[in-house]
Every structure is written in structure tokens, then in C-alpha cells.
Image (cartoon, rainbow, N blue to C red):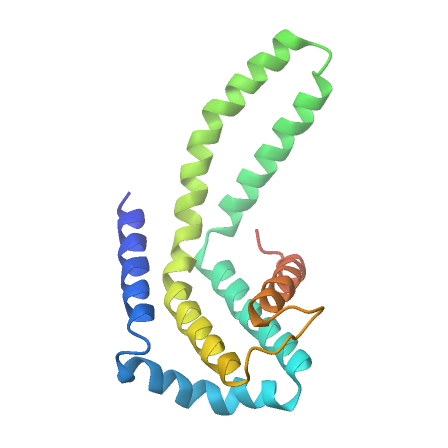
Length: 179
């Protein structure tokens, strides 16, 4: 519960900072100072390719932060345990009594594993939530200045980011063996 309180505070502060983006120049200006000549230059060079490179870099950083701030062994064991229960349930589909017993066991374990995995994934969010919020605010400013061009299959920056981010995240997690 302590982790949840800290996360809610970080989230609240992040949203206050994001809301003050246009009102408090000390927030917006340093972000533009750093990102305009770096990621902005990539996007000015080639919008689609720049977006793909940025998404890959961001997701690489996020996946690495997740990998090194979580207990990967514990996450793997939770995943393996859930997989084992699913396999047992498939084998028992012809035996309703035993299946019900296993489902009850699964439900009781689900609450415990849900809280364990929740605590395990909160830590990386503490490190990444504010930077991602600031990055998205910068993205919004950058693409508004370009009059919100369509980047990929008729999508704007946000839709393009989401599609490529999902793909990059899945590939990077698999390649780096992150649970």
C-alpha cells in the first residue's frame, strides 16, 4: 500500500506539471531546449523514420528500466504459475468437480499474485511516468507547430506512436527476456 501511495503522489505531481506546461516556462523551456535539437531534428529529417527511431529508443529505455527495477525472477515465477494452472484446467475440462476446485484455487491465488505483480510493476512507473508525460507534451507542441501532419496510414503522431510503441515493446521485451 505504501508503494501505491507513492505512485499516486508521483502521478498527481506529474499531472500538475503537465497542466502547468504552458503556464510555467521553467517546465516547458528546458524540455524544448533538450528535445528540439535531438528528437526534433530526427523528425524534421524524416517524419516516419524519425518517429520509428524515437519510439524504438523510448521503448528500449522503458523496457530496460522495467527489467532492472523489477524482480524478474518473481515475475517469471508468477507467469509460469499462471501458465501451469491454465494447462491443468485444460486437462480437467472433462471433470467439472476437479475443474471447479482448481478454479477456486486459482481465484484465491489470483488476488495474491495480482498484488505482488502490482507492487512489482509500480517501481518502474515511478521512474518513467513524469518523463513520459513531459515527452508527450513536447510531442504535442512539436506536431501542433507542423499543423498535425498524418504520419502513418493516415494517423497523427499519437496513433502512430501507439502502434509503433506496441510493436517495439513486444519485440524488445522478447529480445531482452523481460517479464
